[in-house]
Image (cartoon, rainbow, N blue to C red; front, side, top):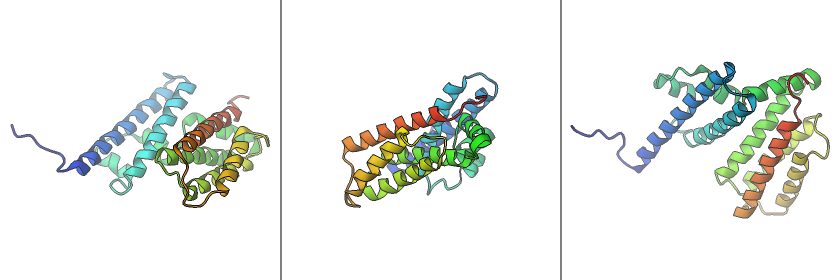
Length: 210
């Protein structure tokens, strides 16, 4: 039997491996969404796993932007039938639990869009560091957007961890040149500060029923 190769070189092989990973992420998200809807997983577990899948999806889809410009078409091509995953990954970009908390916030402070904006800015900033985008002119605009969105949310106190940490980082970066890059240690510390601030942010949002 003749062996059929899907690729002719290393670049093609990497592309197909990325396709397989994208396929797996979409399938896993669909399975997770169905488990959450059927109460087969608790909300905190769901949120943690869903956030990981969304981050992986965003990172991978950025890598595949030229070869897979349309995720819905990719899903149709491979007959995936994963509408819940497509909504969660492409349309929403937020776990259902976060969407719900944003709605709770909106009912009292009309801030649902700002909550979503904050979450997206946190994720984008953390993703950029994972992609080794560490030049000052790459990092500064992302942290500036995050800081601005946090300051717009009235439910957060002035001394909220995320606000103070982003202010410190923006001050530090403003003293560097645009082409300067964060060291590995600085990059790790910034990612840690972002992750810590994100967790504090999620904890500060009103819970359903409160």
